[in-house]
Length: 345
Image (cartoon, rainbow, N blue to C red; front, side, top):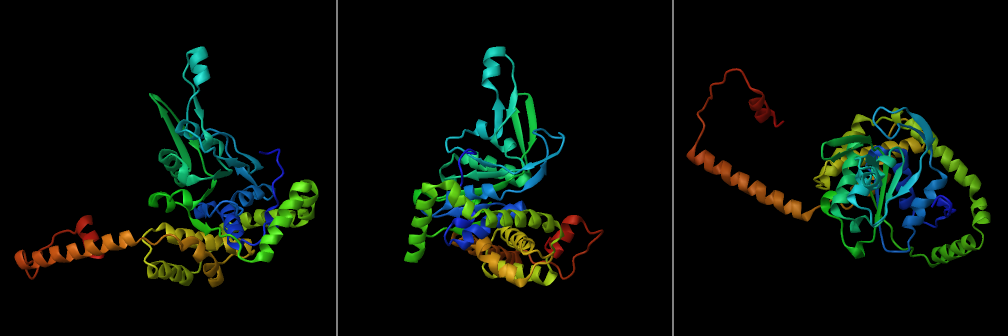
């Protein structure tokens, strides 16, 4: 794939949310990754591969824990759709086992993705065990491989991007929840934009080098902005008032997962850094909220919570009738459990 010239990221027509989400995810891996959902042919994969021209350099560790650190350019690593769990996590080198009769544990794709960008196309079609392993590694920053008595621990911190066509089936809710930003990549409505898509695709196929040259200056400027934003990010803070506003928004929307506020606030920090600021503004929350909070509401959980609340009320009413507490309950030294019960945690 490295030998192919990617379609320039900035040459994609429209799709502002798609491009914004990918840039924010690249600037701040703490967002928790980006999920692109949409029909075939709307530019999802082209957009991800277009990031090749703007990927920054980072300091990464070697393949094993404690290895020497070095700087290198972030690479785009694509997960094959037919990848097995052993390919992803790591496992026994079968050639060495057959030829030498020795057991050698080798790193998988997750270890090789450490410090880089991992792209998982058609994530909804992958074996659930493979998806779970990828998301666990993304959350924990490491991959643990065990084969019999042998174990290896590999660092695996990476920028995660997934894409899917919902016509082929949904993602399980627990997997969907793990992606920080979610983009619905809709077909363009404007006929003029669709015609421009055709013209640019035609010109790119005719002469990729010349077409890319027309966007070279803009691409180089964007690459520099991404590098600068990643350097600014550690210094970006969120004012307490905006933290409270973000939480109020999440609660107003009745979103159950705490990952919602993490994605929202980390996405806002990334946008501030991309704008060369060291403090989040209310505009950052406005821009990031649709990306971070869509596809998080669960009617099923709402109904379950309602039934649970009704059950609790019934139990407490029965307790009051049958086991009323005395007016004053003697207490000695307060235990941790009693303190938790009093203040709700």
